[in-house]
Image (cartoon, rainbow, N blue to C red):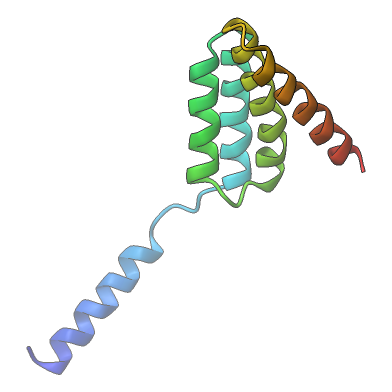
Length: 106
């Protein structure tokens, strides 16, 4: 290829990537956290867990939402353990939830 053609292709690629919409990760994180909370309130623990995992995977910059998602995930795991009558796992997540709440308050 000729140099002008390569430069033109690079310029077009740069312009196209600049036209991608900017994602507000914190807003999207809050939205996913809200969806996870709704699923939790409805007793759909697997859906709540999946939504939290999606938040963590796709929006690592949503720090505030991720912080609150930790507490919600602890609650999801606790309720799931109680539903399965796994007392050891339930006690672990009860303590972890309590620890994470205290850590958040500091």
